[in-house]
Image (cartoon, rainbow over all chains, first blue to last red; front, side):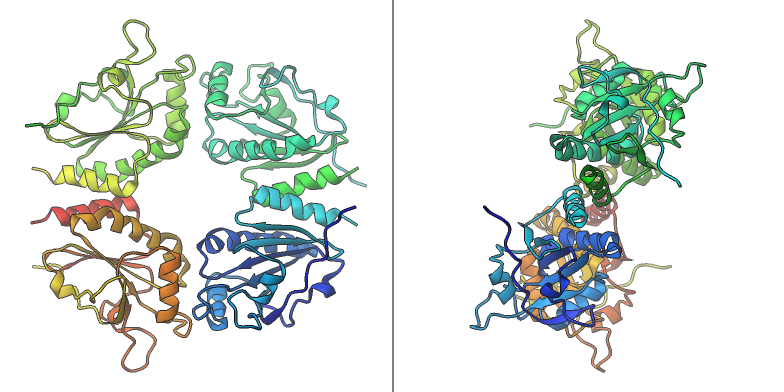
Length: 157
Length: 157
Length: 157
Length: 157
């Protein structure tokens, strides 16, 4: 019998918009919606970030944990934490954003991105109350579908 | 104690895209999503109709009943059934559309529109499995919210 | 040597938004921008009509003649003059719109559409001060290009 | 009698997408369209940059000089030349972009921005063949208007 596996832990170096890092394990009991993005990825900026802002506004008041993961796998010298802070301020991002930890071996793919075997950015993650990774989607996700999926996870016991 | 009342029956003259009229009472057990619109209402054409097409594509395969109601309350001479058929064909509408029955006294407001005391078009109706009118919204509805609300009703026993 | 031919005369039955029909020949000395459309053509409604409204607002004050031509070649029973009047009112069309004259032999293609050998709707016509048809484009026209072309004709002596 | 003054020279440190810096004075005889922007300015990214890409594609083949000016007046530590290079690559910018020279006194406003007394980003500049600054517009500019204005300058002797 098959069932979705546990979402791998997030390995992050720094967090914005939150007093304490978001530890996935500590979120058990909560639905978690996350978006892995890069601040210089056009599709992230035009679609995924505005969508996550709307998800945060609509679902965070109902206990859903909404987070961004800055999974930089190219232009590392441009997408620094300093640049990310400016980006988050200019784009009015209020949800927590964690910076994916650079590879230990100096490679381009950061650790969380590697653990999830993401294909690129944006990548959406939906994690249920039990910590299972229920959806991982690379690319554009329609709002209608996303609203339904989040609600489905919220309605689970 | 307060609870949502039953959705009033739909009073219609003609139906498109369905072999038989949709009788609300016969839909008990199904979630019903309906959009009251006029074919010459700009907001209906640019937002509500495309949204309903997406709702139909996403939710009809899961047993949700999706329907349009042509609630003509102005320009009656222009928005005839003949014109509606052409409109539905040109805009690729595949979900059932019922024509709201003209007022018996010759007034401008058709019967279903009057029964629901709608303020204008577009108006969205969400009806649960028990036939209760859970939401009635005049104007624009964000996809994210709508997806969540439909899923919420679908998840109810 | 080749040069653009004279724009064929418009053959129309009725005009909206103007006290007198627009006779192309009487417009010599003026640049004329026209859009052939159908009120139930989705691409006309979403792109061409809003574009023509902007063209009217920007260029009519500078002497450019802006007009619509309702070239109905399908769903004739739906796109009547009565329906067109309601459409023009609901969509806030203030520029003159002429109804293309039905074919004398009862065929589907109206007379002006046939004279210009239009392929469908929307079709944009640009006519210079001398009455020559300088551009005839079927489909979508980018605003940047259109603004430049109109200005080019306006700048001609 | 009043007439538009000469466009002040551009003071830049680095240029992208061009073998040699663009010297305004050397462009006499050419129409110049420029956009002052910041890579982390949302309105620049969503509107002004795509518009300039379209202007470049449409008008550069006809001899119009199209350029960007990276006028960084905030978040200087984030919007470095390194970051700008990554941004230009990711957003597919092919027109030349000059980096506005930082203020000599260490203030936040760079030198070209100060010389033009720009109010913010994006700011559009239209310069005629004689080097006169004909338009300077802060904020959004409609394509239809912009196409007409550029063409107007192109048509001047």
